[in-house]
View 1 (cartoon, rainbow, N blue to C red):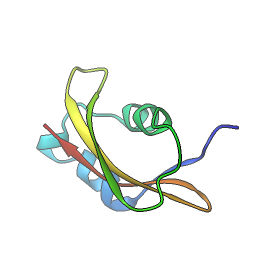
View 2 (view 1 turned 45 degrees about the vertical axis):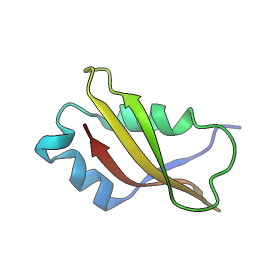
View 3 (view 1 turned 90 degrees about the vertical axis):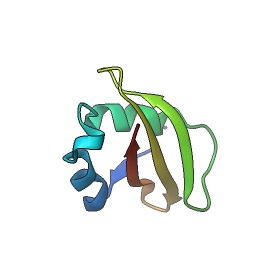
Length: 75
């Protein structure tokens, strides 16, 4: 079963910052979906690449409603 990816308002706001330029919501969903297992506490995952080639990290946590994306850190 496909896990629901929930992107916080904070993370959406960060996508508009210069440091996260050219990272799309689709890139975030793809990265978060590719993380195996369960994430019980907020954890930083490093080294994802957007389609644009931009590298980024995400901070995610699993909650009953799905996988919560807390923030995005562009490189």
